[in-house]
Length: 401
Image (cartoon, rainbow, N blue to C red; front, side):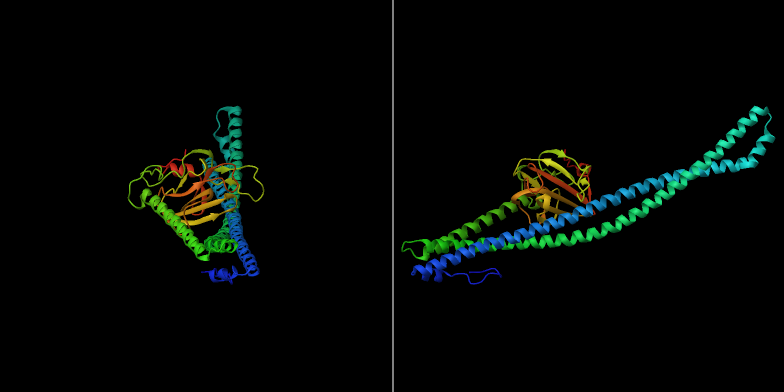
């Protein structure tokens, strides 16, 4: 029997046959096998817990990056606006200064007005008042221009600091994502190993508990039958995935809308059938440390319904991710990635490294993580930054609404 690296001294069928001939030996062997099954279950739960913990750590780091990214982008937008206001104010100040210069400016302007005035005292006073007001306006415009320049510079400096902090958080999130991927792969491997192992252990246990004269050969035959059934189920699942890939364009075959997402002329598909239940945008009053914005668009859909790859790409992440529940992230190239959250348990049909086609069925809608009902939380990232999926998808001929 092939055993995981951490396993030792698993019973053989010869051990079971020998133990059946002696009651005390049989009892000891039953206890040993029960302990091995319990240990197997513990190992599976342990590795799955580690995968979930790594996923939660990765999500926390990703949320920190998203918050820093949002802050940096907001500061830069404010800095750009202040810079534009400063430029406008400078232009106004320059125009007024030129007007004052042409008029002589200051005391010289007052003297010129006095010498040129031929309409009496009232006209002279009016013109002097206008000149004084013009000078005051110029001083105010100059002060406003200087303030706008200072504000723009301050915001630019703050944005630069925020970008530096964002880059550190990006690196940390990437590191934790790789750890989460490794932990998730390890959990899947241990689960597969233990499922195979438990088939044998449970049949050995059944053979020991059988009080008839039946030999272990019958149980070995049962093991083989179960193993073949498991292999057949795995082949059927692989065939189903291949058919889904082919129906979405990967194999060139015909298909119906039940098997794939409806593709736009640009090769994009709506990720789930349903209506929008929550939009991308700021979420006031969020608790400290939480993402300041809702980073995607929620699409209400029935439990177990298909989730489609928005377009072709490579699966970057597929596993538990904190409040996202089960999460798939697909990288499409040109800095674009799409994410799919709250996938139902057992409803993830792709693994890290898989190549998927546009409209391919990749998962099933669920309500895992921080979810109050079955829906798809759909995200779009460009160069790592979350953006509003609605205009992005509309521009690609696959509107979410």
